[in-house]
Amino acid sequence: MESSERAGLVLRPFHGVRFAVDDLPAVTSPPYDLISPDDMRDLLARHANNVVRLILPGTGHYGEARALLNEWLASGVLTTDELPGLYVYEQSGPRSVQRGLIGALGVGSPSVLPHENVMPGPVADRLALMRATEANLEPIFLLYEGGGPASRLVDEVAAQRRPLADLRTADGVNHRLWAVTDPGEIAAVEEDLRDRQALIADGHHRYATYQALRGDHDGAGPWDYGLAFLVDSLAYPPELRAIHRVIPGLPLEEAAARAKGAWQVHEFTALDEALTELAATTGPAFVLAGDGSAHLLTDPDPMQLDHALPGDHSERWRSLDTAILATFLLPKVWGIEDSEEAVLVVHHDPHAAVRLARQRSGTAVILNPLSTVDVLAVAAQGERVPRKSTSFGPKPRTGLVLRVFATN
Image 1 (cartoon, rainbow, N blue to C red):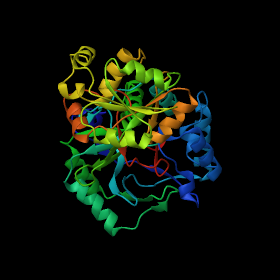
Image 2 (image 1 turned 135 degrees about the vertical axis):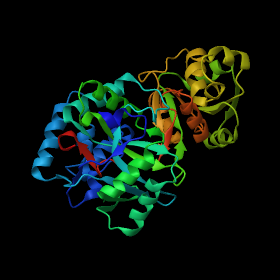
Image 3 (image 1 turned 45 degrees about the horizontal axis):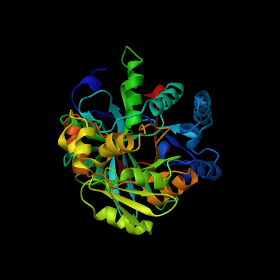
Image 4 (image 1 turned 60 degrees about the horizontal axis):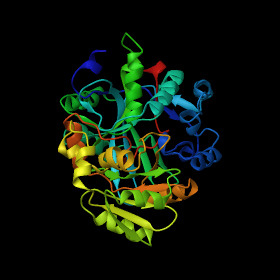
């Protein structure tokens, strides 16, 4: 357990498990928490061996995921790479290119910085799946400030070597994967990362699962590590997008009326006009939408806001829109607990959030994205933003490389 307990950032090689099918794009998927029921049906229709059958087996069906994983390994649907390695992974689309390293991350190091709170339900779900399958089926996403040998190796490999996998998924993104197995190159990466820190950009619940699984065991073993994708944010600055909320059962007009006692409320007949104003607004602001006109909330009452925000957090934390939402707008203005049952989340798409609000006779709360600078600063001082505050991207594709404990 020595390497996973030392203070540095550890990314070690592992025997990757990869799909050996002709139609590789058809067996991959987005991360588990971005897959809607409609997405699930579409992915299952594309290929009988889509990885979604492993990562979303359904509550109580974790044993079926283990049996399926073992079946695919035995039949050759999945194969294990002979040599342990780190994997260079590249995503390229119309707007961006992102490259980084996939490896086995040392769990429990203070050099791994969470920035977001987690909820017990998703952790319990992922932990049950990981215990059953004894595998890391998809990587978490980490960002670090690089510029060293590891970053140079990533770009050299992508420019000069033939990839193990080269595919284009239905969303128009190209994915390429290379294995780095040379001991000297792996040692150079290890030395470069030793004194660095990494921010968890995506995968807080899975990292909490890694920690819980490690706590299940007294001795050293494969549970001391978890699958991770590490990106140099200086070379490849991430996108940071908003995660919107939907409050089922809270009618839009009631939500807007109750907000008027604590906010300036501006009405718009067109949703897109309200969204344009939201994007241009500095300071706390939200758009409420659903059935009827959209409402832009700005300029909260400073005395009410100060009284609601917890005094044991930094001023930077207290200025975050998601902190104001979780501690003021939801509980104080609307009397709603920020729980998974009472508050639904929709990644990125405000129009999708509004559609869901209409379906659930509720209110969509549209947010601006947080700034990367604010998130990094909050994490660096040991604080965590409220749940589902950030959506960093582009996120790694699930199904390109898995990590199975029996071979690592």
